[in-house]
Image 1 (cartoon, rainbow, N blue to C red):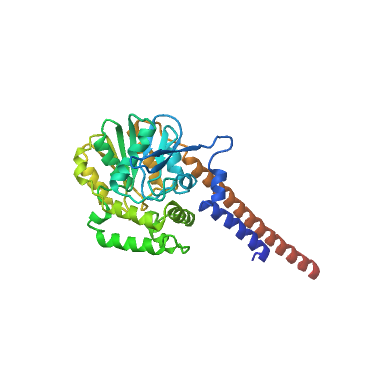
Image 2 (image 1 turned 135 degrees about the vertical axis):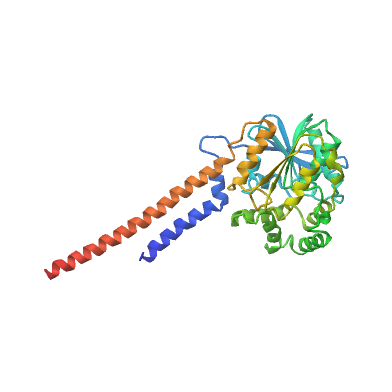
Length: 367
């Protein structure tokens, strides 16, 4: 058996390995970019929506634009450092200028907002692209951002070149057969009760729906994002506006090229909702991703499929920067695992040698 101090040393090494595996914030910063490469930075600006609300938006990367539609709960600064979002944002910005923004009431946008409706979501998107002077661009919608993007594309077909929908639905939870008004009421009660609480268990209910296969560190980051991005009052208003949305009537009017991707085990927005989009948007391409998460994580094979499909759809070169973190993690894990294994081997060999020496000494005494 190993001595207590030896077991303690091995325990520390294993703990270090697990910190890398689960994405400790410090290690995230250290291996996000390879040595000698410049880290991708974002620039944050503000524009004004038609009703006077200030909307914060960010740009990153160079090239033709791609606009990520705002979705339920974002924070431009927090997301940029997040192990949940960073790989997606970095990959999209490798060959294009990525534009994203915080929905009204959340993140860096005006927080004290009384009017939060689906229609405001659409006009806020318009305010951002108008402020940047964009003529024509692809829209990328995740989750509730998909319905907003589809609505904008129908109203502005001359400006939207492509539509990419990941984990989206044409109808909010209140209109879905497997969810409905009762589920929406339950979610509202949970938000009111525990959103801003120091007890994370309330927010963990939402995190588990979005990331059922997330690591403990990813779940912790997502839970903190929820609290950092909006107050309980605003989170409830956003949830209600999204739950009551229904753009099914617009689907046959979508004429822009559309790519629909949906995770097979998505618990937040069921797979059937993605299939419904594909069945009603003429000429759309549909791809099922093999994941149980609502948001794709960097260690999943589904993430590589996502970037493959998006690159082919837009005619871009496949991005590689998002893989740097994965490769660096794998390398560190292998190195640390070898260190743990080598250390343990040396300890065992040392003990065997010590036992052999004792036996030899006893034999010498008895000779």
